[in-house]
Image (cartoon, rainbow, N blue to C red; front, top):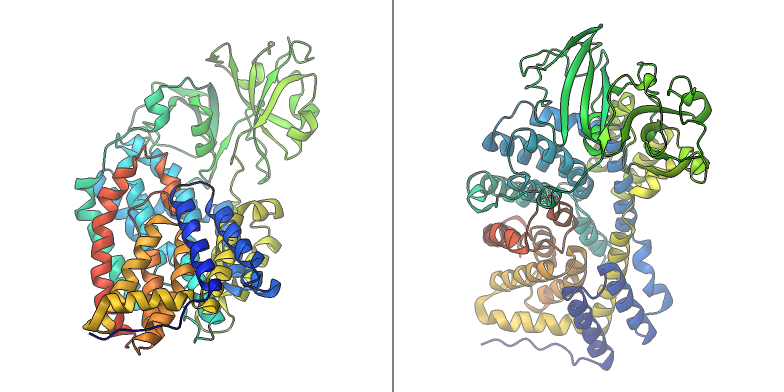
Length: 597
């Protein structure tokens, strides 16, 4: 049997291997976040003198790292303009059951994830799908794992779909390999996506649990309000009945009445049709009121029964009236609230119950909780005001900039075309797109900064440095020799399968970016040992690093749906492990056919 012998490993190589193994253990045991662990590993290697200062920080100057950061801003711009919300609304349409819901979620999400970072897509769609499922009496746990998996399947078809493929693309540039093409992964990514979506449609429903959300399980008390929403002319719900619009079984919210030009319709029938100018009166929790105001053309009514100010930077705020407040004993309209506080009251909660009636006529008392739509500076201006005991903003309550949605979509299309046609590298195209979104006011500077997942960027940048150390010290060659010898005389195809499975195993234990960063130099060294071209081995780690579904703690889209779906660790293993095996089998067969040895 042929035995491959690498050069003897120096102390630097053994030290690097030891640091990498310790990092693996730390991440598997969740002793700290992946970003802290990878930075600690990088600095330990640098502190031993194995990497120069320039080499230590070289990964943070990699174009792929910059592209990932810019793509976070691009995805946030599409979210803040409502472009993604509009897409989701059309996507779910009038799906009424589990099968039709899965069909309308999986394929469109996979397509979107090919061109947008999948984490923001899943984060944006999770509450929408929960809302949609609960309106129809379905368990959200039947849809959220397929949502996460679909986004991963689609992201493996282009170089920009996920930070994992961008990490591999950056490592290829560092290794002086021919750069990864925009659609180079498509010949293998598309078959795997089709296979995965068929699995999610036909097999996964037999494996998925039926669970309640944690808040439902706890039965927690939630503050309730009565709020009026005005249907404007551009609202997509116009001409739909209450059932079709999904307003009949809202989570924690009840449609009390419809005020149509002074004529009150109550109780509201599922067949009542929504018309422009209707004032819909809802009673329930603030979280669902936040979701309602994200519907285009559905605007909260304020104290004068007119739409509340529709400025994109305005957000929902809760404030509790103090015993010394001058508002006590005055109606909201008489207090001239909007002029004095630059905020519009849209609902009132008192003594554990909602306060009904027209907003402007409610006479305020000490301890009343006001739900308001306020200017961005309201919290800062009134946090310490004696008029209120407590002032707090409702998270993510800004209204989308729907008038800029098509601008954002045009910028995205331009970015994709310019990168795929070779006019700009993806790093430049992504930054130009992010800048264009800010200049055209699709997203403001604060939201752009907040959208960047800095922990992921740190994992990628540090991973580049660790990979360089493994290559420089011969540690990668030593591990490659073990893989090559394990395959024995079976040839490069069996060795490729081992590289794929090793990457898959790491990706199920670590953050996916860390897994491919560690395996990249090993894959290149293994290809050299068996006398094969390195490209199929590198593509193997890219595909394996993406298509890892069984662990909920190693990838951000899994973590996003874990809590809201009420899942357990075993739910991901039960659904994800068969998909891991299917994807691995197909990938190992296709890789040499697409990228010959």
